[in-house]
Amino acid sequence: MDPLANRRKSHIELGEIYFWTATINKWQQLLMRDDYKDIIIDSLAHLSKKGKVDVFAFVIMPNHLHLIWRVNENNGKETSSGSFLKHTAHAFKNKLKIEQPDQLANYSVNAVNKQFEFWQRDSLAIRLFSEDIAFQKLDYIHANPVSGRWQLVNDYCDYKYSTAKYYELGVKEFDFIKDLREEY
Figure 1 (cartoon, one colour):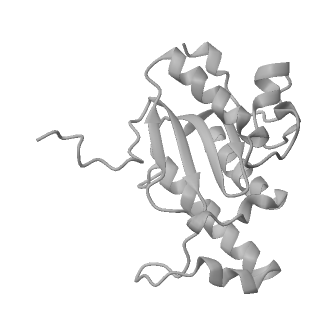
Figure 2 (tube, rainbow, N blue to C red):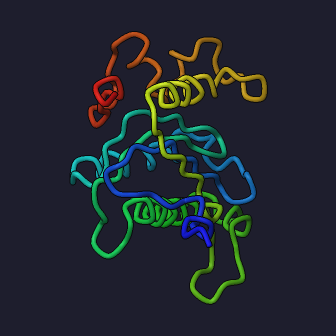
């Protein structure tokens, strides 16, 4: 039997670069507002500053996010990806409690260990084995805001919650970003 067959699709090997997607529970558009996107940015910056992760690229869409990152080490007893999801979910819950308590019910779950679930379970992690695949995923990430479904901006470099401007124009708006081009 293949030992990898039972691995979760969210499995991440430490020290390897991955394309990673996390989706808001039931594809709800919680991340439409910038202040919710800022929670994600702050969490990524924190984990990067602690050396837990290296973030190479991202885009935060209304109901999901894509990252290209490397998880360097666990965050205490938790995986760094698990810590990221847990921290952001807690911040989302606190923000909704204060600002939109009626919206909390949209994330309610009937579980023994939690009352709310903001992220769908088992995020997608794809190891980037080659330069070609890595840059294909980088292009995919950056094209998300201009894709047919979303059309959030006309030029993907104009989308604030993305690393497109860094890779296309050399403008580094997020100080925690590392250059993927230096990895391959």
